[in-house]
Length: 492
Ligand code: AMP
Ligand code: ZN
Image 1: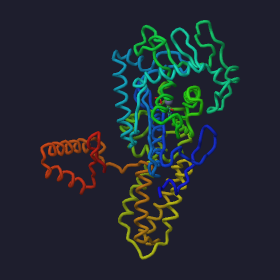
Image 2: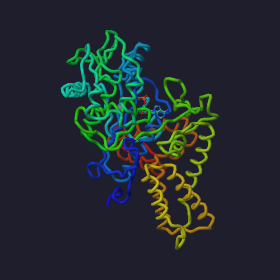
Image 3: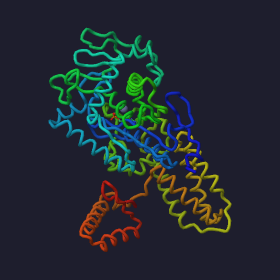
């Protein structure tokens, strides 16, 4: 029996505002789409929090035995500076300012994004599609929405007709807004406005002569509206209706609301069963954000090179800090909070080492099986990682009591405690063991890459004795080499 059949996962659906039992469309399979970054600058720690939150969710679904298709896009076109379809494209602007190609901007910050997420030990998504790779599909869906009468063309741009849509469906159901209130609270249109109503949003924008990122379309040269790419890529890879759609809380309106409208206009029904929203990371009580400058970059934290924190913190400590808060709660970053997280993280890691060396007894007087179910109960309750961590610290207490001879563990229970602790800490929470000082300053990384290259060369030369010796000696030291499509990686 698969684990997901034994565990009763419930999750907070932003669409209903309720915690609901999770029932995927196809038994044993989950389709999950998460809005990815707009790759025009380095990701800050706030962005990372959202992706780390969904990594926890992805990891737990995998742990439960689901086959998950996890799609997380890269926004590399169409995201304008202003949510009301005004201003420059963020990527074009950066390219103009730096005098480089837009695709150089995209490449640079996509690589940065991947490198940072690897440091935080995120699992890569199953598919990472880009907006520019799906222009044809975006044009096709616009044509379909136009033919159904939910959009109109104006001077080479195409806008979604929100009032027409609202008369047949319901606009605002995700964010709890009513179209009448929106109409009452928005400014009048001016003579230059192309939109028939201020709530309408762009599906396609005509490219002005200086706009560099442009594609031919039936309406002339232009580029897609930002909301459209997610509707197109989610439904292309996951189907017209899929299980989970996630993103940061700040994307609920207008981005996700518009996604729902586009999909309903196109397919006639709601695209997503469960909408999940991760809450914001704040700094000094305010949302971390690129535009206001109220943010910290991951590298500033790893290097301790910032005016806010007293020292450097490792990626594992920062991840552990994030896991101590529920993904739907606001989390404030501070030196005190990180110091406390660092202490907790080391206490947990030390306890795991002590656990390995504990002496076993004939009988246990600790109920490890019931404790393990409490860990599952925490995660089954909308991925409640802080409660899971509280349970892990309950086990830490036990480990010390057993070491002091005040409690006992049988061999079977010790094995269960070791495997469960490892599974919850490393597989589910995605926490990594600490690297020593040498590792963190890059020397170990350099040495590991050298050994991997030497092994690759030995294998290419069919010198399997040397290549096996490198792998086996590293394994004896507790370092596992893993060969994958992207090359060889290692794990301590
Ligand atoms: P962007 O690159 O601006 O499209 O943002 C990428 C992701 O980061 C989105 O899902 C946002 O919701 C999320 N995000 C932005 N700021 C924060 C923050 N302060 N805390 C958590 N997530 C954030
Ligand atoms: Zn999106």
